[in-house]
Length: 132
Image 1 (cartoon, rainbow, N blue to C red):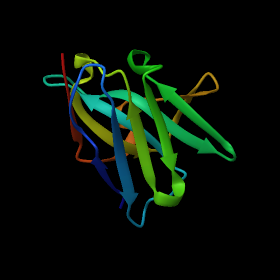
Image 2: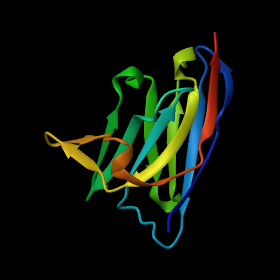
Image 3: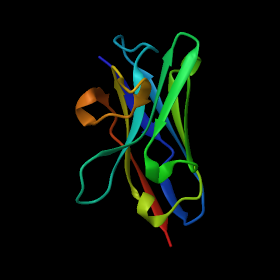
């Protein structure tokens, strides 16, 4: 069993920043999981935002094109916590943001965010609303 609990969502104006956190717990959790953030806008399916994985001493990250240069994913293994630093927020970033844990997807030698079906564990989500 793996439990994921997100926090840090809120309402901000365009151009603002937020930092999302996700704390992992449960007897089934270990730091070898690939962790990711997904977003779900009203009326749409969940889509990947960013993912992070550590293989040995190397940490790999992957980002959706829409957030590259604005969002940064990171994790603190000692705290079992995943983060998403969100800067220069846009109204189109408004969505419910979910933390996910899974086995990881690699394509062409690099980490890929993958899709929903690549992740076995999910949090309940935290709402981000960006006003113009």
